[in-house]
Image 1: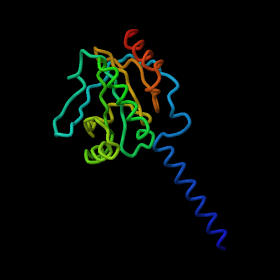
Image 2: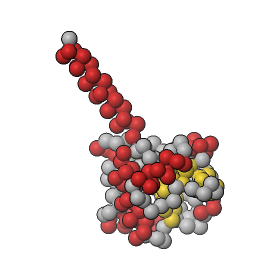
Image 3: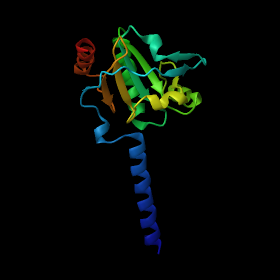
Image 4: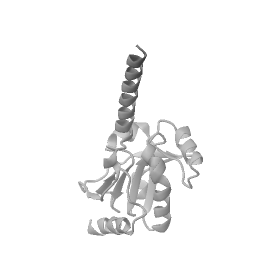
Length: 176
């Protein structure tokens, strides 16, 4: 009887673990092998809020190559990736990097940033605009051209620390 109960508990834990893996998008496949070309369609305009409560939109950033990086406080792979992404951002200041949280509340984003001692502003995507953006997995990175076209994407953890990754990003921006 005790053995049966233990078996049921372990089965339940396996189901919970698999569910978390699927929800967080973390798997051996969440590591990004490369940057994938995208549709080159115009990105829909969407809004986000900063930690001071001010609203911003994608169209405000036209004229610069942009790297939109989507993450969330509950995303386990994001914990590993965010410090590397911020180092990459500092080394590539000519590209506008916008780290956008998909959390439900600003407090979640602020807590994550404080807990992991990240030097970045909390930027929360507007709830009403989330359906405009196709984010299949977290973390997720979009390369957006100066004129607002979606040119490439990275599903999962990007290889921020590799020189080849930086070269690929620059190639995608120049080949648009």
